Length: 606
Image (cartoon, rainbow, N blue to C red; front, side):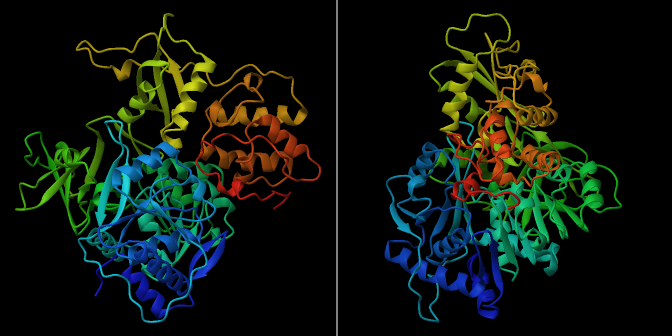
């Protein structure tokens, strides 16, 4: 009988031990090996105190060891707390302390990034166990994982998801996907986001293979991209991959989530990929990955809805008094059912605020999503926005109040605000002692502020641009008027070039200017791509443009080795084709550094 998320993987491993479970640059692993190594590691964890109700942190790079570790934690009866080694130390420390984690699993490569405090178990070549041993029993109500989300108070909140919610998700996938769809599932999401649960277990619990990649921008460079049949992707990421002509060649199913999906992108996905099914999925972390979905057919017209609720989910559209509103009338979306989280870890007040009594089902709770939706006459949900200041950026959930709290925590800052414009996070800051009229800029102060935040927040929560103001605009009632915040100055990202530039630097400046919308003459060859307004999606296009311009293969991982045009030009001009020793960014704001950090030299045409 299936009680835990990992049980169905064990069944697949028993049936097909020789089948490939994981493809990655670090190695290919069979079901049998994944089963054996995770079983042996689970025994070590149990010996260290793992068991039901005990969270175990996992701080492991994106290799098969990550999957071995997650399975081992579940088989030990514990729940796993994902800790991205690229996250700032302060955030990792908070997650460990807030969750009460006392046991942490890591590898030699990631140990230096682990928070201090918990007992550390290093994942290495473990002793093989005898056949027939079973995992520590779990019950469906036990917690399977804890994932931290951005918090409006400035403190992230840990969402506790139970095994029964995960099993309901797998059952729903069986209803909407065919076996061929899950034969090769791309796993590009950070394990700190719940989409990773679907990517990993959709494959492993149904006999498919996980194609593990560093991030979505690394898809074009994966040696196993042609094995990907199922792709979960954020709309903005998909647009970037399509712009670069970088989609895997054999994708059959595309699942969009994390941002509003537009019909124009659906049409483009059908037209420019091999996909014959495109889905729009919706669901907060508190609802176990997704709670509604829609197959957006190729012959349909009109903007996609977020579909109908999953079989195991309940969805209500309610007014301020928690009364149901009729079809066609907007209201707030509340969700319940098998996928509903236990609540927030050690946050009873936040749990009571968001998880409220379900007035329509005795003894049950429902989650207040903060999303404005409308039920159509066909029973589908049409997304209409937010009731608060939570936003989604490239699929990442961000509470603007948390960013603002971090900004105002800087000693140089008196007041702060944050908004998302043109798919970029913009910070507005009133410095201590500000006295100038209108918008003004200070490069050193901007560097100090963003540098501090880069040490406290994940990359996606660090503003791409910081604008300094004398005062924040206020509405008549005295509250912040976000709509009145000025647009960032058009010339803000660039600074005058400090050198005339070599021919290669000039050519690179032209490419950067094309991608970033800047005058090449204003680009400082010492300025980092991200500081000029670039992002990880633009890196995919940059790699393709450079490959064509310089007749030399340039991969996205290569670009993570370089801070600026100057060092990049030296690499391109190096006849040996070897990556020169250069100054690496103190913290790669793309959050995807490992391909460059494994210490490998990148050779011409590799």
